[in-house]
Length: 245
Image (cartoon, rainbow, N blue to C red; front, top):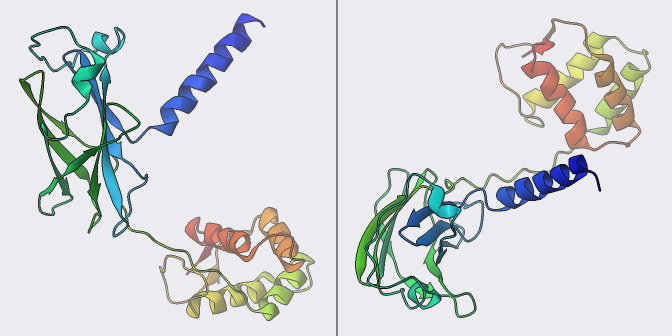
């Protein structure tokens, strides 16, 4: 295997691993690494979740960071130091401008140094997790900002009347004018079948419609693409000023 392929493989693995835990945040506390984030990502309002805290022995590479939090240890670090800390960690969480909540931690029986604090977010916003604790009797205090909480916006299935499918077919084949097709779009918008930004009261043609939109219309009419994909083309035209609402 040549050097370029080796480099490419390493790069892909590195970026893939980094992406899998992108929302967790890590800090180095003395000889230890603390990684904090949501157990289920992304966190959604009103969906049961948990704050996940992972403590491990920091590697030499980890210790090269310039934001290490000092910790006075009475003895060399060991794996036993990261277990049994559920009662030695005080954890509180704030979402957005909401009130502070304190979490009760449970240690994972199968993964040493991993703790969970059940929490169901009640509102969306940035996440602030504050931890005060002790390792080997030495105190530390840190704050993490993992992934923010979002609303669970469910997209309803889009169903478009068949007569508009006929219009799309005729338009794609040049049998009706752009204005006739645009009238069909106006119907979709006025009846809330598709959602687009409203700028004016009427729909008017402002630019030449791209050929790929016509292709989409023909494919959609022949049921080769979904209603959602067809609507994306319409939304593209409106948001890019090809037609104006």
